[in-house]
Image (cartoon, rainbow, N blue to C red; front, side, top):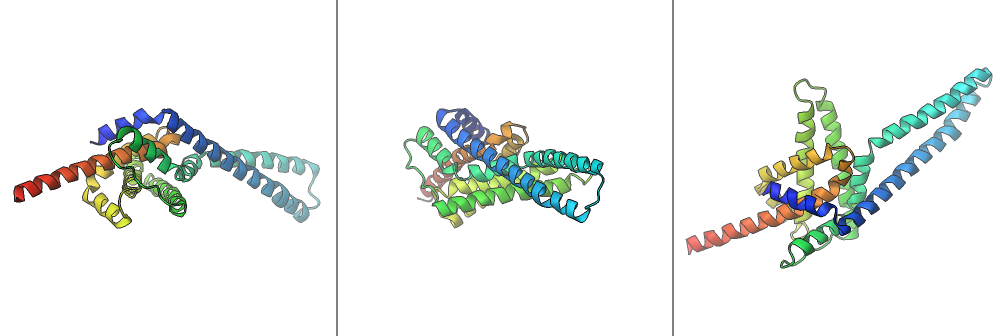
Length: 244
């Protein structure tokens, strides 16, 4: 079931509809990161450097060159730091378009089923912020666990597998169910959803490809939710027939 869902999601990643969402997500991500970089650079250049000049007015001229070098080093350091935010920022922006992804999968792969309901704008924004927080928290926890001998990379997969599996499955389920029902369904199938989350964590670990993680995860969990729902329905019919 998990690999069928993953394979179906990958087959959709490079479709025309998904490309549109991906380019919108990537464009907004780069725009946000460039804006943050320029803002931080200006803040350093126009606040920190004048403060240093005012605090040390009699610095020799060669120290002025040192300030210039420090400015360049700070810019490069900030750029390197922002590169670590590409994944989380992509996640929070992609969260605004996950319903678009789900609608494509539901329409193309399950045309006989009634489509799910998109989250209201406020809920979509809250969900995207939640995804951002989950990925940040997961990677912070994994970073600390990396310092524990014998855990290392395993920590990254376990933490992200649990968090990503939980959040993306509940997103897919809430298009058809209330939030309490979605959480209850996730708890009943916790093992399957955790294993699916490990697949998403593996996708997240691949450089460049990880920019597609939110789109892949959303599509995969739409498929997994459909499969689990169909399986539960079949079991309910079978149980009803046996009781009858």
